Length: 270
Image (cartoon, rainbow, N blue to C red):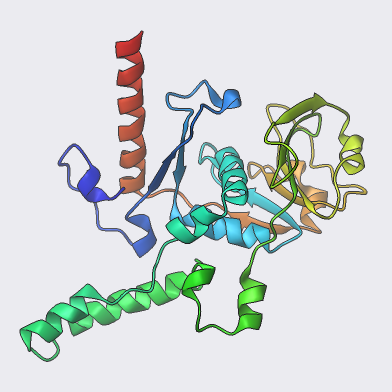
């Protein structure tokens, strides 16, 4: 979704970055059971920053994802699960496709040397800077060195464990023997018993003050936590920290539009 999809013609400030001016909206076939308290629990809003974080976290063994309260850090876990289970979505939706520049083509057709050159160069520089963070999909990098291509691939687990405080866990099997999601309760020390180096643990602190548990764990860990360092002080010594940026005004308005539409639909069906 982009600015032209807004239903209300209220001016939107110009985006500071090219990856702030659109939003991917994915409607799941069913609601996320644990997130029914929000107006549209069957929707995932994926920003270009989410794709970048997916690649960054997928290339590190242990990660901390933090950011301002209420910025949807916990929702990133559901996006991570979706992109692991539906890997073809990366090639379809990851931004900044290498396409011929329309502004440059218009300049050639008009036969006016230099027309739009400054704008084109500025746009290309912004996209080049963005590509340093946002990895171009594999199939669009055919000219890249194969060794570099191999290094750019994120780690994709066979098992994803989304755990709340290390005591309540949901197990997602990626290309595994079953599509069912398993749930069970356990002690934090039990995480090492059913995970291995081919697993990824998505740690969600929940409402308590539990610290990230990582002792004797071989699995990859992504902990989505608030900036309260008491929860991850020791874990931070061995983990890479990433910060989730705030969404742009346009992205927030597009999300709000979906929420209003979903709320109106629920109202008419009630």
